[in-house]
Length: 50
Image 1 (cartoon, helix red, strand yellow):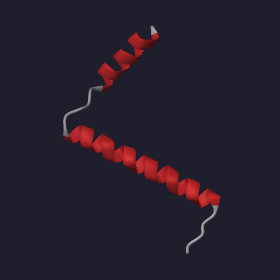
Image 2 (cartoon, one colour; image 1 turned 60 degrees about the horizontal axis):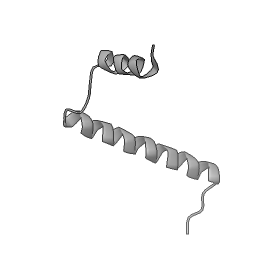
Image 3 (tube, one colour; image 1 turned 90 degrees about the vertical axis):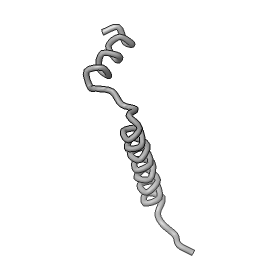
Image 4 (tube, helix red, strand yellow; image 1 turned 180 degrees about the horizontal axis):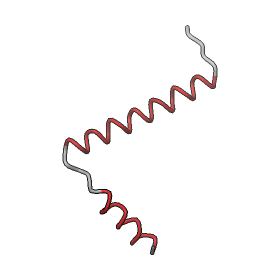
């Protein structure tokens, strides 16, 4: 049995979440599911009335 501190567990959980999101982002890029920064900022401004 392996024991670790709560702090270490939470750090590992956080990193696993980050790495998972990075993998999703890479998959989106490979499949052409992305937009330019200009388009993204424009959508944000429209959404928030800026």
